[in-house]
Length: 395
Image 1 (cartoon, rainbow, N blue to C red):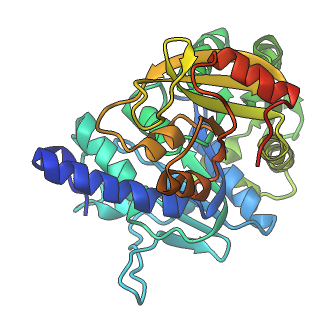
Image 2: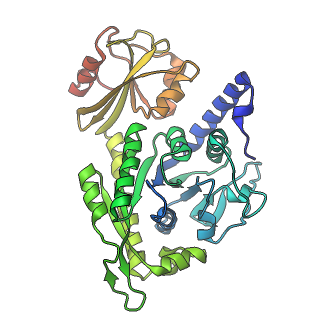
Image 3: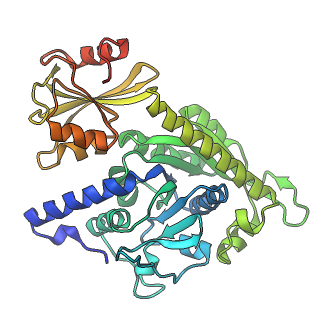
């Protein structure tokens, strides 16, 4: 199933990628919230958090997809008790993800391997192709949430998710120990670099639940994640204690939140679920109500370019609560379709003197607002200030 597009000749490869991009946009438009669960290092319980979060959301009557993009060490099938599940083929011929429950479906590389314990020895291009195909060729249908379990670090897989799903949020997982807190800062900086909005931070292995008396003991420290979240200016979404039953539940294919619903650990996961729901809706409303904007303007030097399709550069402004927080000036790749590139930059608004009809329709279909009331040759900084002052208004 996995096709290495990198081996296709140049012109054919461009056509395949553009067609794939279109399918990606159609699929992603059906998913309200996308969340990548990531960590700076391994061993922090990231997959446990992703699996229990997905199940917890599904138990709240949300339609949920769970995508495991850890291609070298997929753990999600084992944790769900479905290691050798088969991908169902729909009546229309399309392949769907594995159905775990009426509200939850998942996908990992494991059902596509020839043997259960086959090693995946792939380099970057094939891994990138696989993740793109997981999203473009698999019919996920309409989802409220897509939870993406990424491998630790900031390598090919998280980078591909960030580029392929530009409106995804990041959920950072850490433990209270200093070494994990140091590494999670790298994930934070990764998100800032690729312009991925951060949903918040979870402190896993925060305290220890005694299997005999059920009391919580600060065996592995606690509170470091909450202090780091405050330092970085991001939301603290909750702490999950160490509980020996988490390991047993994962090994048996019965995630903690469903296997031991009355436990303190399940209560902690339920609180995390509530906080994630609130945080995603808040970020979504920020965009819908204009409190967060990413404004792209075609420029030639500091001035607005007359022709958006011929502009060599774009000035991109991050605006929060009416104030410009970040400004970047980026070259547009010559071989990239403009609408897809602007979507990749997570633009919410595009300002230009005018728009070709087809481009305007493409941007609007992607949920990007277009404003064509600015004069060419004016300074792009001034155009943004006029937008914020209400001198330039949306249609």
